[in-house]
Image 1 (cartoon, one colour):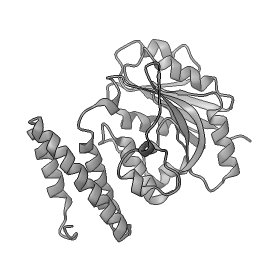
Image 2 (image 1 turned 135 degrees about the horizontal axis):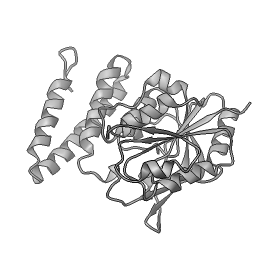
Image 3 (image 1 turned 135 degrees about the vertical axis):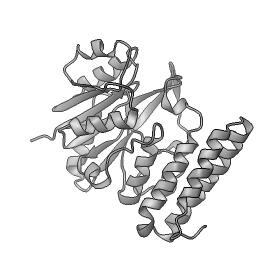
Image 4 (image 1 turned 45 degrees about the vertical axis):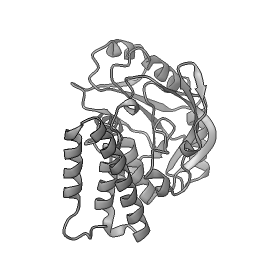
Length: 281
């Protein structure tokens, strides 16, 4: 019996582009699929668009943020395998079929991503070398930037039982924080074929917000604190060194733009970070 795959699309005020994502899931060559659209309090025509399609619609009463929306989708889902799709991206037709086939042939795999095609408007972009997708154990790369793409990844449900859900305290960089957790526990497998179309360059994308390093620093310090007893000395240095590097860059930018509130919050974050039990590095 073929495993059920749950595909979760969180969305917020994306009525102008959401249908492309929905249709790309419904056109998959693989069945069975459970498609869940989580509407994070949209005030546009999203409810009317979603009703045209055979899917599970979860409407939230207000805008809670992408972590909350994804988590509601996970909790509502029934699939053995769970995939995510941002509402401005699209799956290519064989995406799910090829990932399921990989899982069935590689039973040890728990997290699998694919390559993707990048577009900014109508223009095709070539990812830079440092954007190369993670494969295997990847903490050394996970601390620097997000090298697992949320719209390409498929996970076994058990991963969420083992590592928890997305952290709802992160309005942005929630995927960066989650992949840090994954990187400490599991290898990521890679299908070296582009099976997702990723669209970028719009102002409503979370990745376009300023000051993202604030939340990356928060994620690094959280990871260090929560997993301190099991971290090797090398891992401790790797995480703290990157947190301090990002702090220097962020502080310089905040000073330049007079963002004293952000500097205060960052200082407070570091002050609360060092419990008496931990030596200062």
